Length: 164
Ligand code: SF4
Ligand code: SF4
Image (spheres, rainbow, N blue to C red):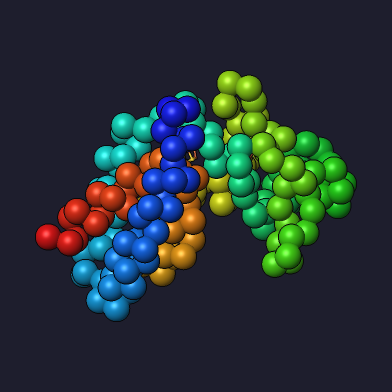
């Protein structure tokens, strides 16, 4: 897995133009069954890919924290939301709460998340490949394929299914 992760930024860069064209076309005319197709591709990929062998999202990017995330996680630590924010978060350029540092403070050396049951919504949903109207998050996906080997494989599988 380490070799795959190390090679991913270059692979993703090589595919960037192709992916941009593919998603531009997809946005114009998404197939009717796209939501179902994405659910199948997502499920198939995550049968093969074990996030515990990877954790590259937690190591390199980290999530946004919504207010609901902050409240839930602060409660878990028995902190006031503001105390949790001061200890762990900062406000980024887009005015969102994000981690003060990556790798994520809550990631263990065994790649387990120490706040798994209360983790941010963005962590639960990453890499968003089973969400509805997947074509609407193409810019984010084009970035994510450089971080997430599963997202990379899912986009490649999408292209071979839909470009037939
Ligand atoms: S979601 Fe993607 S980047 Fe994150 S651990 Fe799983 S395979 Fe790795
Ligand atoms: S909160 Fe957990 S799942 Fe989310 S980035 Fe940190 S370690 Fe990963």
